[in-house]
Image (cartoon, rainbow, N blue to C red; front, side, top):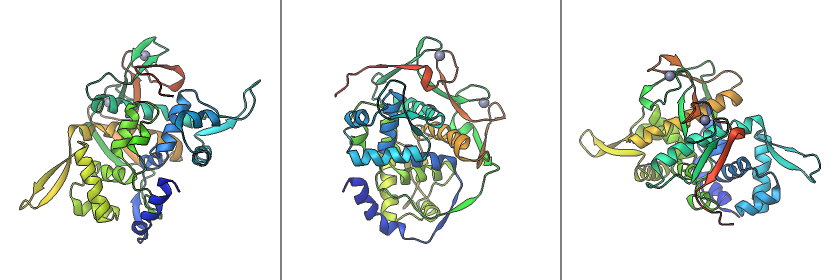
Length: 326
Ligand SMILES: [Zn+2]
Ligand SMILES: [Zn+2]
């Protein structure tokens, strides 16, 4: 039994609650795909050009059965597609348009990790933007004014797809992002960022924070989360530097407020949300965002720091500032 399964069983108790109502969210749906550690690692290798089952297995040291099931889920979610190349034997896994479009999400997570989690070192991965010929950094910007934005400059409101759905399955994994696993093949700022977001519960707690919820009790009620899990995740997020824990009232209760670093996580979240809106929302985004600075409704896009054009997987090369440990 792998860790994932063991955790599923451990959390079965927490899951056996009456169905809760949850806001429709494009980020949530995207997170379900991206936040699975193995899915993320498979996707990352796919961006590095890996297409074959055996190669994924060799690169990631992933058990065959786990790899099969993750590839099946990426196929089912239309992130990957099976196909053949002329004159090459066997089936290969190709990124679909949807899959390629997840690249900016990876870049935005990388931007965050490079800024906050590289420990003052050079970013492990240097991007080359082929279309402008520059080595560059990814920058998350407003697609209207092309300027970087901060969480404080964003005003969200309900979009045409707003509403609530009952949540049958609460997050099933205790810690779906295992930090050791995430960095097993290569140092990676995206992996470091995912290790902070931690798992789906941590993500849902972060989202409560962005919705203005600061207090433990309110989070617990909104999320229907077991108190031990909530306490554990809040402690981890405080330790990671995402939240600051401050007393309120008579001083024996605490609020959780975002640090600057925590606020900055909003950017990759919005890039994920934009992806979910494009591919999973049937043309009805649950939420609209206004950039207060330029007064436009906007979505988050990732551009090249040098030419300010959007970066896509196909016009990007990589320089690695480390050697493979394969
Ligand atoms: Zn703007
Ligand atoms: Zn460029």
